[in-house]
Image 1 (cartoon, helix red, strand yellow):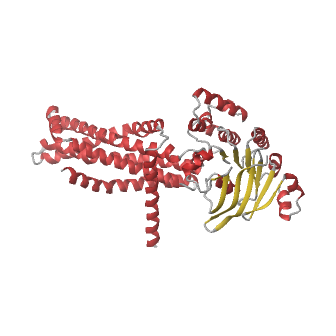
Image 2 (cartoon, one colour):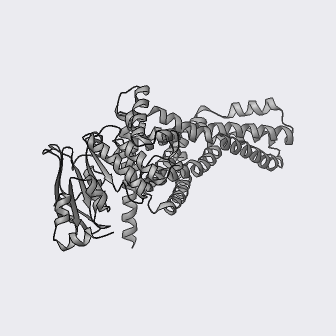
Image 3 (cartoon, rainbow over the protein chains, first blue to last red):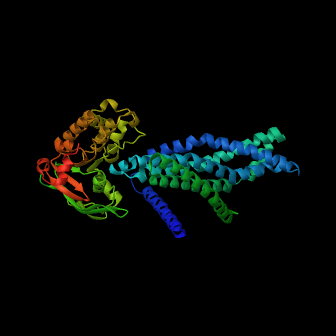
Length: 254
Length: 243
């Protein structure tokens, strides 16, 4: 029983690795589908702008409220801009954005490819002498890897603005003071680290979603199961890998 | 008419221990239409898919002209698939693009034609299958018969040498069956060779030069429609008397 479980997980890892290698191979061999990549960036990235903005602002406002009242007891309200901006840029924005994007685009990609698989559209792409990896996988992975870091960065800055609104209205903190504190606290590496993590999360979300889409069988029920599998797995992987990526970034840059 | 453009030699295929094909061999000649018949589950569609590598075979050989193609990598099969085209039973149209774009897809992928030339060619092909008026509709707006006709149009867009038809008349009303058969006749007159997988014996007899009957994983009968009618084989007799 345990052997079988290990075996099936090894096969799963092998198949995902194989798909990733095929993706890499397609990056440096023709044909390239630049139009499709642009289309996917619009669909996955620009389509998720509103989610990223809302997550950012709300997180920043809540964090400022919590830290503002929490630190006020110790006379530490002045530290709110630094704490909020760092925690949002380094952790909260990348994680929250990635988790929500995992739900939105992970399920979208897997359902789309899964539905194409059960209706023989993937076979049709192959039968027409084209590669489903080039046509479907490469544009989606590239779009996710490009879009997610940008979305998380935007979300982070929206969080700082959300924090500013609460700091000004609730704690009467001068705008200039807040902005100065934020600018003197955040460094390029904070933004780079967040973008690096999100690029990795984007790769995980899109790769797993494409992989599972190709494995979909059993009609519409199979498509439903596929989306659940992708959202659950990618969320867990994002949370676990965040720890290791953060540790790696600290080791490298601090 | 005598040159074999597609040769199948001793194909074996099994799924999870169940043998689907046992030493299946046949050839397809230039301009010929071959009917592949058999009961449901006899492996007709699997055999058709195997011919262009959509299904891997366990052993045996497949030759396109003199090139062995059964062991080619997926990427190496792509040029072959522009010469041997496949019309899916369901049509398998890309549901997020229009009828026009579906038919234009292989032309954009494999030719250097200008957009205006592609547009003209696509409309010509759609006219041939009587679908030019529906060129801007989405596949979900089409009936099953219309989807099959668009699927046929898409499969012939690159003017392939061989067309593989996977049950193109299945589930259609008599009017649509006649329409699809007329399209297949037109293809045949243009010199395309074809393999026609079907349950529909009268349709196969109308279109095909030779018939193959698949039974228990082997070719049980091979001959012309006239030889099929004259056959005294009990299985063929019972098969041909099916409604």
